[in-house]
Length: 302
Image (cartoon, rainbow, N blue to C red; front, side, top):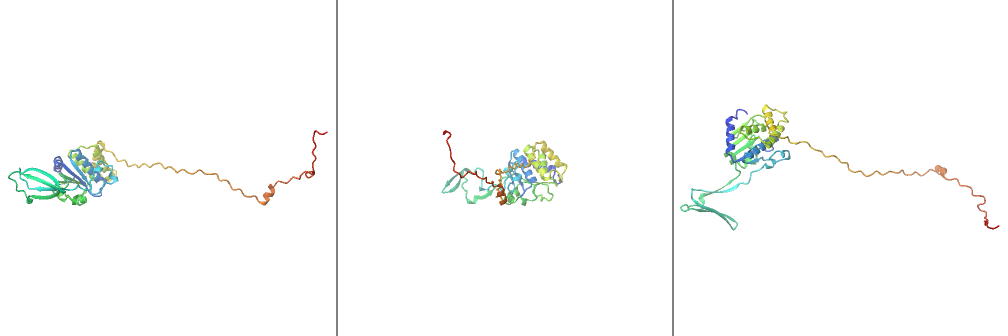
C-alpha cells in the first residue's frame, strides 16, 4: 500500500466490519472483470462473516460476469424506501399502539398513558428511509458519481455512513472515511490484501472470484504486475480458487443427406441413312414353287 494507507486504517476497517450489521459493497457503472470480481469477492466474505450485505452496480449483470460467485445477487437499485411516521416521544408516555383499516384508510392508533394526553399533529413528522448500511465499501470507483443512481438517490446515506474506498487509480477523489488507494495492477489484489489484514478467511469461492479478476486485469500476468500480484494469486490457488472455463466446444458439422444419384442413360441417336442401309436385312428370294399350287398326298394311300 502507499503512504495514504496505514496500519491504523486497517484496524479501523476491522472495527467497522466487526460492529456492522448491514454492509453495502458497490462498484461503478460498466464494470471490468477486476471491479466486478473484487466486489463479489468482498460480498461473499461479508456474507460469510454473518453480515446482511447488498452488492450493487448501476449497470445490470452481463453474461461475461455470470461465472463469478454471487453474480445473481447483484442489485442495480436499492429497495423502495419505507414511509416513516415519527412522533415526539417521552419515556413511558405511550400505553399501546394498534392499527385498523376502515374505508380504505390505514389508521395507526396510539393510546397515551394517563398524564400524557397532549399528542397532536404538531408532534408528528413524516419521512422516507431506504437502504440500511452501517458501512459502505466502494470498489474500483474513482468518484461517487460513477455509482450513478445508487449514489444520487441516497446522498444522505453516503453523507452519514463511513465509506471504505478501495481503488487502484491514483486519480481517485479520496472521498472515503478510509481511502485504500495504491497504484496496482489490479484492484483485486488490494481487496485481497485488505481481507487478509482484517482476518477474513479466504474460502474457495472468494479465491475463485479474486483469481479470475487478477487474471483478467493483469492480462494473464503479462501487464504491469508486482510481487504482491503473484502473492495474492498464489494464496487464491492455495485456497482452491479455480479459473473459469473459456473453451468453446464446437459441435460436429453433420452434412445434410443427399438424394441418390440416378444413372443417366444416354439418349439414342437415330441412325443415318447410310447406317440404315447397312443394318437393313437383305431379303431372301422365295422358293421357285412359292406360288405354285401344292398337292398333298396321304401316306396311307397306296
